[in-house]
Image (tube, rainbow, N blue to C red; front, side, top):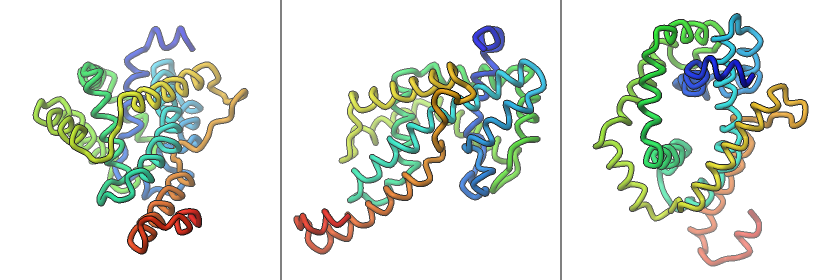
Length: 238
């Protein structure tokens, strides 16, 4: 695998980016969800050449990182920010992503480079052949995704994201950000060293159970806060 990724690094990176290419992904059946490991491993199984395989490895590496995002980071922050309105899953992912871009602004330029390569269109077609489109067609989803990536290159967007990050009553400290970032890197490296999951079977990258439990606790905390904010018995029952 090491040699493959050294020869085709751009295909690997493009696959890692395009794992988020499906708009309305949660509308797909669970087994066809673009972040399901069955889908990621399915891409590895059908990859017909080294470029497609490097792309599929990048896609699956994204799922490994999402195990941390969807099972740990987002659920924890949803519970922590329970008093806030509108602070949902996408809010916390954007908070984290904006922090990544502050630390590594070259990420967007990397996207622009790999998305502009001649073989990128063929890799998108490969993905479209084997991925459930969910809410929109693959073409429409990709247009929205590419537009979102382009927007993040703009200074005005970066400044707005930085202001939200700084002014939010629910902080994401530098230490917390680094802890989750390192957890994500470790998850990716773990996948790359054990792609078949023989030593450590993959966990649900969608994080369906953890996210649902976080939402349940969030609702319960809000009810307890409205009825009697300092009632420890009400909180204990959650």
